[in-house]
Image (cartoon, rainbow, N blue to C red; front, side):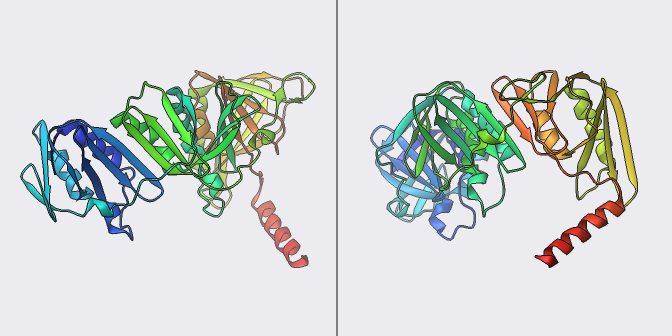
Length: 391
């Protein structure tokens, strides 16, 4: 086989492939790039048995055939190559890539592409990339609950939604209405890398065609395809977890405190007091009274303490709450997704979820228990031990 390819296009494919390619795989050929030359194009693939990247490039001096080249050395060479065109010639067990010889594997031995049986199809606008970029921050890490490690695309009751949760916080995006009825859980590698990959070898401004079956999903844009196995399992009923809050008493809603504050100031103040936070709990205590918000962080083990007070706008018909504890990292992650200069925290009680809504997006964070003194913490542990013994 022989083919001459545009260097920049080939380099971009290899950058995208780096997000998918297997490292130290038990199947050595998965550390290679599949290259097949037809009479009209060059077909490229990488596959880790769970996620597959495909694309096709135009070329010149095409001679049909195929080969597999080692990704690591190929990526280094192409990344440092100065010419505009790269020529690949393969014959038997060796290949010549613009003057550099490489060992090859038979392209016939490369694993077959994932197949779809009676796939369904839906078209997303480029907003899908933005939603996945947010969703990746909310994915769980517990491999014993694999459904929490992926993002859920759900179409039901005329709504199309994307959701992600690690059981401590949750993200939901309400997209365009849909007549379809389906739910698929997309794996973490696909959610995390979709935008980067299509930015390199697709077109970030074009619609994305999503084809799915019971076991696989394919994201397609132009000549680029990202195919992955779906996560098997039942996704939690996330809509039932998100409370409906309102300022006034309304049927179907809980009365709550709507705390409007400058987003950048809140982020800055949280980071400032977090210096004194316990490394184990990573907790910030929020205390709201009238139109002031007080943030407190402390470490009972080292007697560290710091607080700060600044203005906010409080809308409520309830008495001011005392305190609510939140995980600092989770709160900062939520705030980082907000585009507006101001953010409104919807708070109901110290033991109920905090909700942030902006445009079509909803963010939820569960509170953490506040322990005021070291003695209380020790008593809490003793109580838990006694309960376990009694059980």
